[in-house]
Length: 206
Image (tube, rainbow, N blue to C red; front, side, top):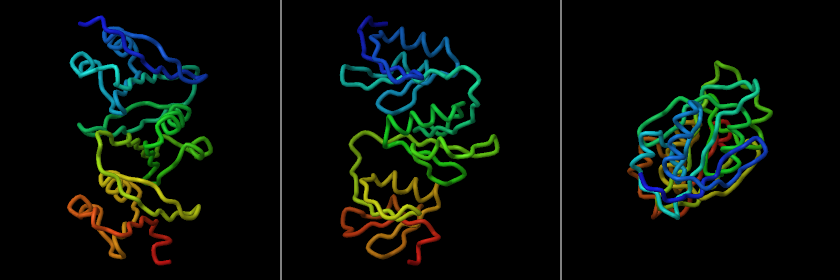
């Protein structure tokens, strides 16, 4: 295995620290700590994948060690290209993922929760938590007007992100005034749309 050095962002309770590590160092760290995660360009990978995945100087590598000290952990389904993977995370880790990667989404029982509110969200072992990492790779983004309990906002989203939000948070999507089913978004030509709106069902008729 190559001795090439990579800059790795390692999460700690006090913040992030940049550490120079070889590929083998990264693999050893993950293998030795069961609840440690590695994200390569926002995609979660395991120790086996780390041995063969393409890494270069432009690759963003992050390690999130499992927190210790008695903090309550929750089972979180982390979405990836290969499907959902169950991980144990504390509230602090969830907040860190959302803060450090603003494209990541967290759904608690189908409701989207942001970094600012996760600390005050009452979580129990019965909650279904899903973390959806930001989609990378140059996917085309679209301007989406979002209406929720806090008011209106505008953000840039890929077609995959729009579909995921519609499915996971039970949001309604309107393309040029026409409601589009979550399962039909992938086949919809959004490039020709003049307006894309996303709204919660409770305010959908306003």
